[in-house]
Image (cartoon, rainbow, N blue to C red; front, side, top):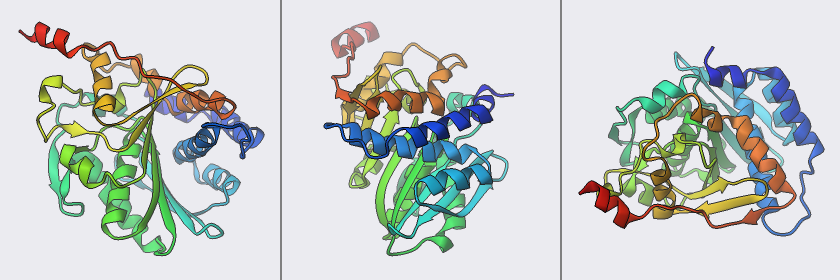
Length: 304
């Protein structure tokens, strides 16, 4: 069985996660950024539960005041999704799980950006097809005067971001987008068009999936290269975290210029690893600079 699939179907792990949700305070009193990480913890658990069955989804959603509105699975891809509704807060949530064959998806060199009519920008073809399918399935259940958020892990995070673009293009009230280990979905011009969206991308320092396809610094003037949207939260050890945007976020890829995606380093991509890293930051969260030893001068010297 694929390592990611084996990891996520472990019912015992899920029980521990639900217990953590119940034991840890939902309202953090500490000053600083702990409230921010409470919000990220909630989204992380909502994204993780997309890997579960109907009963477990119902149970987790109830803890957040949501009811399951509809859920389904993309034929042939092992990617499931759900739409939940909170009538008290007048909010809806779309969550998308990742795929069990992430290794194959990440090493595939056919990361083709193609024009997308719905958004008017170029998007990763595969991610856009997933978002298209989900959007067609959930749109009849969307409520116009409700704020809609999207979340997801891995390829599900990519689909969740594109779904937010579709919602925005169709004049829905997009609340926020929170993704975990999300790969890139568009280029520089596409990211600029949707820069107004409230997007938070949570990443682990050694998770290579958000950095694929890798960035060659020589391509920085190429407007058609893949580019991330929103604020990147890098989960460091313990209570530490870093916050990056724009070029600073993209240059993080230079830390992995000589590495390949392997089963070993994909262990940093597990959703439970993300949740475990968020947990200590609920008590104390400390923002620290991200250390990147990359030198453009040294890089150019090696190219010659």
